[in-house]
Every structure is written in C-alpha cells, then in structure tokens.
Image 1 (tube, rainbow, N blue to C red):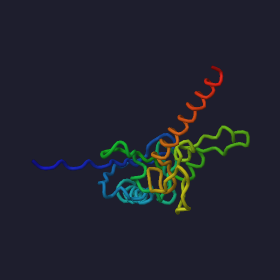
Image 2: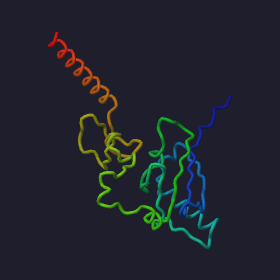
Image 3: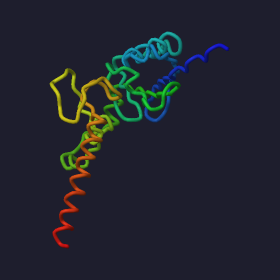
Image 4: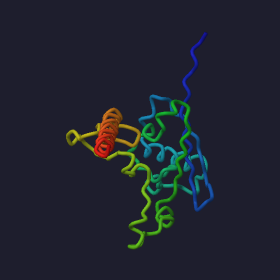
Length: 184
C-alpha cells in the first residue's frame, strides 16, 4: 500500500485596499519549503499580479506591508515560524497585503494618554515569555535560546517552569502548614 503523501501548508496572500480584496493567490508549500521568508512570498505575489492579472496596475513588492491575524509581519521571518506547531501539517496561513501608505493610514498615531492602554501583539506579549534576540547573549534562568514559533530568541523553558512552579507550591504549602501549626 503506498504511503500517504504529506499535506502541504496553504498560504493565501490577499491584496486589500480598505476592506475590499483586490487580488488573492493561494500557494502550497511542502514541509521542506517552510523556511521560505515572508518577503519572498510577497515578491512572488507581486510578480504574479503584475505579469498575469493586472499588467496595467502594477504593484511594487517593496511597497506592500504584510500582516497575519496576530499583527504585522517582518519580511525576514520564515513562514514555518508563523504556523502553530501543535497543529501539525496541512495548516492554512492567510497573509494580508496592503500598500505601505494605506497601512500607515489605517494605524492612527497613538496619543500620549493611550500609552497605558496600548495593546501588544501576541508576539510581543511578555506573558508568553518570549524575548526576541538576534544572537545568543548567555544563559538566562528559566529560559532557553532557540529558533521557535515566534522567531529567534529566548523562550520559557517548560521543564524549568514546571520545576519552579512545583517549588513555589511546595513552599506555599509549607508556609501554610507552619502558620496553622503556630496557632494550634
């Protein structure tokens, strides 16, 4: 019986102007191609758009800003880093493209009184324990340096976190026991 062919990752690139979709393409990437950079996909989209779909209305790849459901994307990020590692193969990633000037118009400049309420994207959320870093800067307690889901940087070491949580729980239980023994 022949082996099942591995599922490919679907990449949908959508060119938006306002809320309207102007053009879209779907690409399929095999597992070996998940290291493809977002910038390469944007350039491929622009070439396709300019040659086949709208020769009169060209799109400059450098002027397109890319974003996914979690926020803006850097062009140097590998597609594989944008996928959910818990879901395995056959995922679909939608990347929205906007002309850079339109992307800037959509994001109003924050005022000084909005600083406390500024929303962070999940990639920048310190609660996730990810600290982006271009190069190894030495060991950090409770962290491991690796190329993971959010890119290169320091991630929470799951084993170390579980050990620390167990130590904290044990210390709290001991403190509670000592406090109750004091009053008996």
